[in-house]
Amino acid sequence: MLPALERLSGARLVVWRSDGRRIEAIAGAPDDAWSPTQLDGHETSAEPVGRRLDTPRGPAWFEPVADVAGVWLEIGEAAGGKGKKEGRGASRPSPPSPPSPPPAVLAEIVGSVLAAERDAVQVAAELSDRYEEIDLIYTISEILGHTIRLDEAAHRILDEVSNVVRAERATLLVHDAERGLLRIAAARGMDPKDLEPIEVDDPCSISARVFREMRIVSYDPTDLLAVNPGCPEGRAYKGQAFLSVPVLYATPGERAKPIGVINLTDRRGADAFTAGDRKLVAAIANQIGAAIENATLVAKDLTQQRVRRELELAHDLQLKLLPSPLVIASRVDVAARCRQAESVGGDFYNLLSLRDERIGVMIGDVTSHGFGAALIMALVMAASGIHAQAGETPTEVLQRIEQSLTDELGRTEMFLSLFYAVVDPRAGRLTYANAGHPHAFLLDAKTGAATRLEATRPPLGVPTALGRDGAHQWRRGEGVVCLFTDGVAEADAGGERGDRFGEERVLGHVARLSERPARDMLEAVYADLAGFTGGAPPADDRTIVILKV
Image (tube, rainbow, N blue to C red):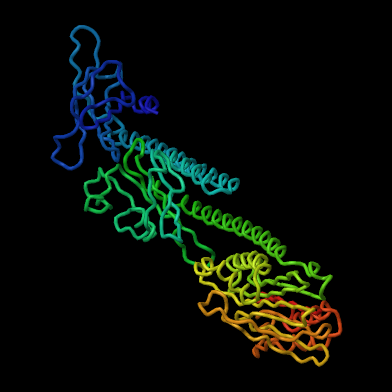
C-alpha cells in the first residue's frame, strides 16, 4: 500500500512505531540503520503533534497516526525531488513544507489501513478461537456419542478441554449424592489416587463452593485486586490462576441441578483464563453434565438389569428348595403352591417323609419379603429337614430350628410364623406345634366342619417359653389339613371398599370339594383368588398346602 501512496503523494513515506523504549520502522524502512531518537514525550497537550526532524535523507515531517497509539508517518521529499540541487554551489536543502496532500490526510490513510489490518488480524484470531471451540464441541459430541462408560469419556473430554484452554492440570469431580461427596472422575497432570473426595459442605473447598452456589469461580494471582477465594486460615489457594466451573444438568421443565465440577489450572502462555475460556468451559460443562447424567442412568439400568437377573436366579433357586408333592405322593394326597409377591419371598412350605410311615407338613411366613426373607426361608428349609428327623415332637423340632436361627433372626430383627404337624395314619393322630401361624385348619371331609389349629407359642424370633404340642384325632379318608398364609386371606379386591378374600372362602372351597383330589381344591382356591383380585399382582406372598390321607 505504501509505494502506491508514495506515487500519489510524490513524497517518501516511512511508518514508525514506538513502544516507549525504542522506535522501529514497520513499513517503508530505509536502507540505513537510522531511527529517530524520540517522537513523543514532550508535548504539552494530551495528544501528540506533528514535527520536523532531520534525517540522513534530509529533513522530514513526522505526523502521528490517529487512533493508532505509538505509530508515526515520516513524510520526506522523494529522491530527485525539488529540494535537492545538483552541481557546484548547490545549496543545502531547506526543511520541507508540509507536502500536498497534508500530512494529517496521509496519516489518516495509513491509520485506516493499519486499523483495517489490525481488525483483520483480530477477526482471524477470533475465527481461529471459534474454530477451536467448534472443533472441541464436535469432538466432545463424538466422544459422548461413542462412549458409554463415564470414566473413559471423562478422561478424554478433560484432555480435549485442557488442550484448547492450554491448562496443564485439570480435574473433573462428580457428585456422589448418597455420601454427599465430590469424587474424582478424571484428572490431568496429577495422580487421581493422590486426591481425596471433597465434602460438598466443606466451607474452605473452592470446588465445594462452586458446586453449592452453581457459579463460576476464577482467580488470577497477578491481579493485585483479585481476592484469594480460599480460606485465610492456612487453606488459601496457593497455585497459579485457576478456573472452576459447575457441571449442571436440567431435565425439561425443571431447574438445573449441580452434578459435578470441572477445575482447570496452570495455563500455558498466559496465567489468567480469559472470559472466552470461561464461556467455552461453561458450555462444555453443560455437555459433560448431560453425559454424566446419561452415564449414571445407564449404570443404574445395567445395575437394575443385573439385580433383576440375580433375583430371577434366586427365585428359581428358591422354588427349587420347595419340595414337589411327589416326594410323599405315594403315601398321601397333597397339593402345594407358592406364589411370591417379588422375585424372592418369605413364604415357604415343606413336606417330609418320616419314619414309621408318618408324614410331616410345614408352612411358614417370614415377616418380610425380598432377599432378607428369602435367606431366612432357605435357612429354615435346611434346618427343618435335619431337625424333623431327629426331633421327637413338633415342639422340639421348632425349638431346634429356632436355636439354629438365633443369630440370623437377631441380626435381621425378623421373626416368622411357623406351623409344623406330624400325621400318623397308623395311630390315627395329628400332632402339631404352631408358632404364631394364624391360618392352619383341620377339616372333616364328611361334615365340612373346620377346626382351627391354634397357636401353641409365639412366632420364632420372639423370646418365649418352649410351648407345647397340640393334638387331634385323625381318621383316614376324613381329615383334611388346610394351611395357607396371610397373602391368601388378606388378598385385596381393590376399590374403595377394600374387601378381603378371607379364610371362609378358602375353607368353603376345601369343604365343597373335600371328596375330590387335593389338587382340585387348590386349583379352585387359586382360580377364585385370581377372579377376586382381578389378576392384580400380589401385595404379599401367597402359599397354600392341602393334605389328605
